[in-house]
Length: 307
Ligand code: NCD
Image 1 (cartoon, rainbow, N blue to C red):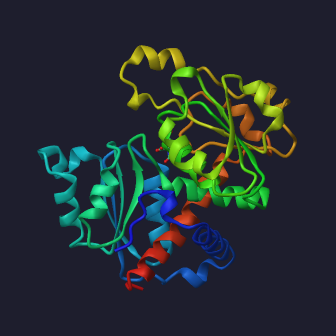
Image 2 (cartoon, rainbow, N blue to C red; image 1 turned 90 degrees about the horizontal axis):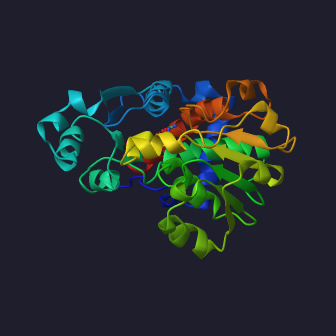
């Protein structure tokens, strides 16, 4: 049974196939309205979410399917001490596919190992978030028209930001990718991401603490929120949270065709004045996420012989 835990579980050919499918859904939504009729998706969210859970649910409804949801660990038997493995073995009796978010790194893999239906990782702790990356990749494809020869600046919490880990790994596979890693010393990209994804692909990257200095060379600026819930103490969070704030003034230093991305939710790191800049793409990412999740749900259900 195929599950998607990491974005690298998908080949670059499959990423092409999914982005092409999402573009076809955008052009011909009616053709997909019944593809998943009578199929059920469970959304199991042990951590807060707005976009990821709702876009999975909207995606399944737009494919003609049904959704059952568990939003918040407090309302489920997890609050009584049930393991992820037992919860998954239970939920597999009710549905055809599962999207799960959990605060522990590796929980999605445990879920997949105990499932009889496909499991999609909707974020496991500070580890990875493959479907946000699919949303990001469709946005890059639509806005920049290519995946190769792009210089991407990741800015903010590169240590705990799971969307950064997944997108950096995905982009590492394309020729000519350059990364500029902009963060405070304490929030640098984990060495395992460099070791497992960047170094084997020979990706060029530089590390800096200076956003403004990096801006002129970027094709894409990927801003992130400082991940308060993953900090060990509040003091460190308060010290680091407003380190980078993208303003309209700073955008003057960015190239005319640079795009600004952010997985959202935004706290302070992009001032609302930037929203009116045509280079701001973060709300486009939200919509693109729904289309890519539709494409992924269809692909996995087809491979499982369910549709
Ligand atoms: C991100 C996440 O959950 O990792 N949000 C999302 O899914 N779009 C980013 C974040 O919470 O900062």
